[in-house]
Amino acid sequence: MAIQFEALNSDLRDFIQRQNIFFVSSATSDSRVNVSPREISALRIIDDHSVIYLDRTGSGNETAAHMLADGRLTIMFCALSGPPKIMRLYGTGTSVGWENPEFEDLISKYYGGVTPLGTRQIIRLEFDLVQTSCGYGVPLFDYKGERAAIENWHNNKGPDGIQSYWEQKNLSSMDGLPTGLKLNKD
Figure 1 (cartoon, rainbow, N blue to C red):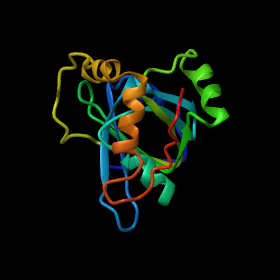
Figure 2 (tube, rainbow, N blue to C red; figure 1 turned 30 degrees about the vertical axis):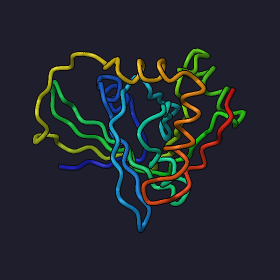
Figure 3 (cartoon, one colour; figure 1 turned 45 degrees about the vertical axis):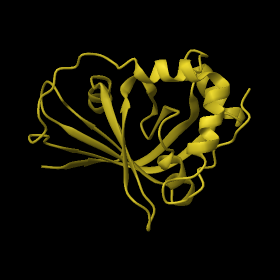
Figure 4 (cartoon, rainbow, N blue to C red; figure 1 turned 60 degrees about the horizontal axis):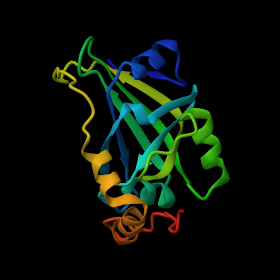
């Protein structure tokens, strides 16, 4: 039932663009496996072998720590409405921090020059394998919209509060691995 591709094609790109959520999975050889849901509006397709997404401040920064230590990253999409399908992108992830000159280039080119409050980094996945599967076991859900909670949390914290939160919660993983996140963003 699984079909493998070396790259995205137009049908697979269309499938991604019809989704409302995606999941990011990462681990090192001796860490816990992390799986994080993300809103599709953060994701951009760069080309047939790479995607990026805005990574905003959250409870932890496991993905960044795992990429720094190991690099392996998988992104999964699954149809929660319409015809069933699951698609995974397998490859190597890197973090483009706000201090990297490429960060502003990516924001300008792919996000209209707007960096949402709370953005820690841009995650890039360079993938060499795309795999689809049937998705018959995925239940159907009705999409009702994005939650306002994270936006409200970022706005209530403000830039200084977010910096303080990064320092307390986002510099190392739950397993004690460094995340590479830089502080003192103005």
